[in-house]
Image 1 (cartoon, helix red, strand yellow):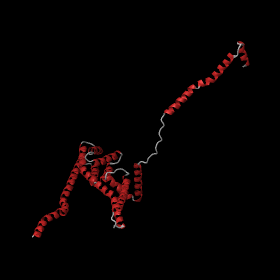
Image 2 (image 1 turned 120 degrees about the vertical axis):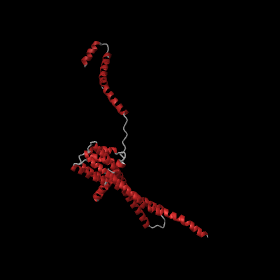
Image 3 (image 1 turned 90 degrees about the vertical axis):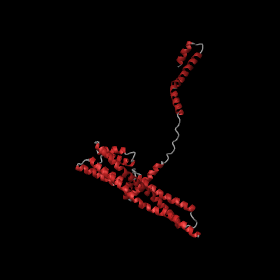
Image 4 (image 1 turned 60 degrees about the vertical axis):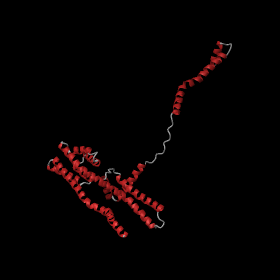
Length: 320
């Protein structure tokens, strides 16, 4: 280093200022060069930091709320499992009744038990509150308890009564629509369609007039596609519809297949018999109507007629 300084001093021996300036410039360059070389990296870091600062922070997700439908389904499943362990035969009968009423969902049994329990508790609680609010002061605790138990039992059995009413309505629809189903099946058979294809086509045709019957026929079509035999599918249909005509129809198809007889002719004869049976049921109801009307006529109309006939006589006798 000293030799370099002496060499530079020999160039300009009059002053060392240029030498000091040169050394200062070299040292400054050595200090500034790493900063200049790292400028691009710092720019990238600043740009990433700036982008991260501009990116909106996602709000904290609220705690998930409990879904009421999930709670209801869990309660229905628990009720169904409890009753299935305690009385499986009753649960199987109830399941079939729900299917006959149009409730195909497997969870329908649990929902029915849950509704019946809620009806019992709700009716009893409402009656208890009504007793506490509107009851007479002279009423005893026994009468109030009997009143609460009676209305609680009514709330408990009310879903069963509604279910029976829906089964009767569906049975009426099935009985009215099955002869039309048979007529359409005859048309499909005469057109050369197979029984499986005919059932699928007729189920679409009956969707507007008889939606419940159409739904059950579509289920039969799905069972046939899944590989179930026609006889088993029709027997399951008879259980769902609770109609003797469907069982007779299944027996008719089986016998026609075994004996080799004409399917369209057998269907036509069976359809005529079903229509005749439906007309006989209508005539039976019509003939039973006068006997049923005698009770309201006697209770409601006869007292009025007697009053109109007797009161003028009573008034005339009292006036004399």
